[in-house]
Length: 143
Figure 1 (tube, rainbow, N blue to C red):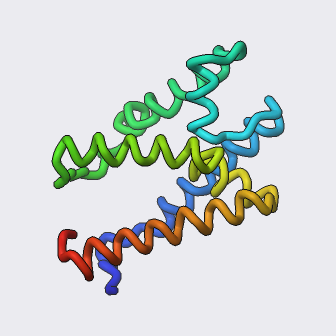
Figure 2: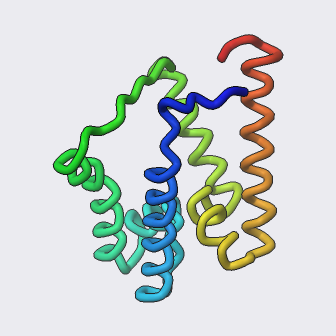
């Protein structure tokens, strides 16, 4: 693996990570809630406390528009087919239900709280990701 040093952006990546951590901490301290996106969206569809959930999701959706007022958005390219994207989304949703949470809930919030369940879940997420990339790239030559 090589690092493309001309496009390496440690300061913006660190700032983004700090903002995610700040938002997760603020939600926990001010609202007593975990910033797990699958739980927030699930509660938005069927929970009694929809206002803060809707505001949280709206903030996620509006953030790129606000960023675009300040700076240029990075270029994004998607080389996968729509069918593959739909299948991937369904698998992620199924995995979130199976794992009782998503990477944001377990990985960001759970690990910071030293939750054993979240440590195991995040390790499983990472191991599955490593395995899939290895299989796609080195075994099947698809990526």
